[in-house]
Length: 158
Image (cartoon, rainbow, N blue to C red; front, side, top):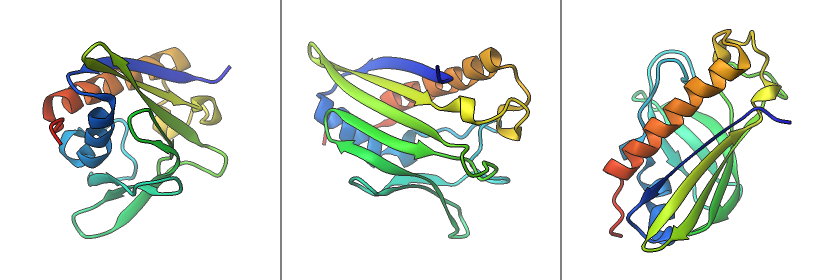
């Protein structure tokens, strides 16, 4: 079984608007975490290039761009799947994020599953030498905080 993180929350929006706000406004709601940076040094602004094959990137203030991953599923109002890697990952150390948007009454449940952490050894710098359970808990807490910031900061009205 793969090491994975699973978190969810509800937002007051349709699945279509929740999806649009997630991808369009990620630069507004994403909160960098010094433990889980994509590359060394400063943090940049995240963005998605729409559609399957589009890039998920971090752009730094000096204009450099780091490709975090590629989109493998782009289903507005339903599902988004993209690869996720940090600059320190070796070939074969790949993780994947799936975000699902499910209607629940007049709200949408947004669920993030970040899987594939078993491809990254425990002694890797990205895991900070935490045992698997501790790393997954800490990373899951960060994803929960990110979703809270998404709910608070994203624009669900258009």
